[in-house]
Length: 503
Image (cartoon, rainbow, N blue to C red; front, side):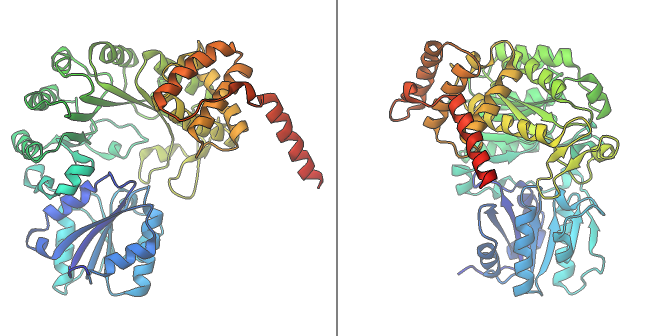
């Protein structure tokens, strides 16, 4: 049985390994109310009825939910249940998905209060008012930002279980000076750093508690190079075999001073998330993205050749004015730079993002249900969008997984996008889906497509697949000679469809 708490802070994480960083900030800044509060985290895989039961077991007076694009549907269902069972409980919503009035999701209709923007100060004040009987009448509350040197830092509220089994998020700054319209950070006026020495003291305490995986969520970690190098040097002094640091880098800002520090890190200790999104200059201008493409390419090459960092790069399909050919060109350029991962994102509609001004001129049509992914544009029809969705899924399974490092170059040849699209289309024909494909079956289907569709000599394909199969440590050996041909599979599928149509 849970102990009674007046205030609960809750959210649904995408996976168990994630932690709710924002809730820990709210908890850290509750002041005297902290003793009456509890953080209760779930994952989106859990049933709303079970989550409602767990929350109600604390007999709370206030429940605050942190709402994001990935959990808004599940939070809606959970709040609806709570309001049916215990309508007197005050429901407070905050987070990016509910911060842009009047563009609000349906769950806001069920809530008592909605706080937009930063909530460290505003949530505490609202709780004080509710608990002393002077609750405000206005439902929508504009969050009042605090100066960063006045915010109580949340790091001591990562518990031992978090440190053992979950990602530890940290931030040395907030905000972003860039105005890329697809991102909510475009609404920020600038980037503001936390006091550096106080931040490093907190990092040292986490390190002493055993944290070895630090995920920085700063949008522009390398914006101010003197600060970046100081943080990197701090971790170099504490370097160990299991220390791992994740940063998001501005791709065209890599001065010599920063390079000198990066070269000192051992292999597999750094991961850089590098947002490319597109190499098309016209689209970059259209979405207010300032990016020097030549410097970006040079910097990725340098990082790949002179550091042991893992490079995770991002592209977005469906930006206003984008076409399949434009996207193919960006993909081919990025493949030639040889990053470890290319994350292929499909554009999503974020409430409040400036990109929404292009919705009508470019006929951007989004899924009305979360995650609000783009369905079609004036230059990309729905069927093409679906093909790219499958391309992205198969690329994760084959290109990003690390399971096909020997086979992938043979697949891509000199035309990476076109050849992988051929592979993706035919894999979908064979499997009928792009999810839940047995790994051994995936190897078998890749062989069929490479030999029949891409026209690669079977013995060459077998040789590379054999190397990757051994690395994957899968039981049994595929019998490639007994696999049905792609042409037979396709003809059979067409014949079956015709029979069903005439049945």
